[in-house]
Image (cartoon, rainbow, N blue to C red; front, side):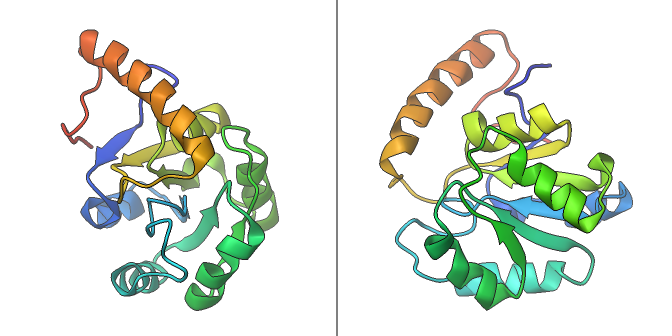
Amino acid sequence: MGIFKPTIYKKNIYDINYKKLKKMGIKCLIFDLDNTLGLIENKECPKETKILLKKLQKDFRIFIASNNTKRRLKPYLKDLGIAGVSNCLKPLTIGLLRIKNKYNFEKNEMVMIGDQIVTDVLAGKRFKIMTILVDPLGEKDLKITGLNRKIESMIIRKYEKDGKFERGKYYE
């Protein structure tokens, strides 16, 4: 349907049907960090996010793949007791490949979950894994993300015109 169109689109990480993902054979959930798991200004994992991810760890291996620094990522990884990859350079797929190879996942067992089409969704699509787009948690973004959001807006307008995607019209 298109390299930028997510497999699933939900309002946030709490609206994702994780039971359905488990039934589909998904074993590895890879989350973006900023504006997906927490706001950019959050220094550590928000309580409600921590509760959800701890619960999900019973059924899935959880990872964070972020374009942000190791310093930014470390408090989340430590707090959640999970692994992750910083400086991923998404939409490059190197971070996803590292997770796949290190933990011996098949691509059909992996899903990339994030708030940006031109980084998270594109990386997942290029890596040929399932993608889940969520709306950004907040308005504030990193400076580089501002350019990504402009590109994303153009992609969404084109997809809306073609009837392929509409912001706020969620689907599985």
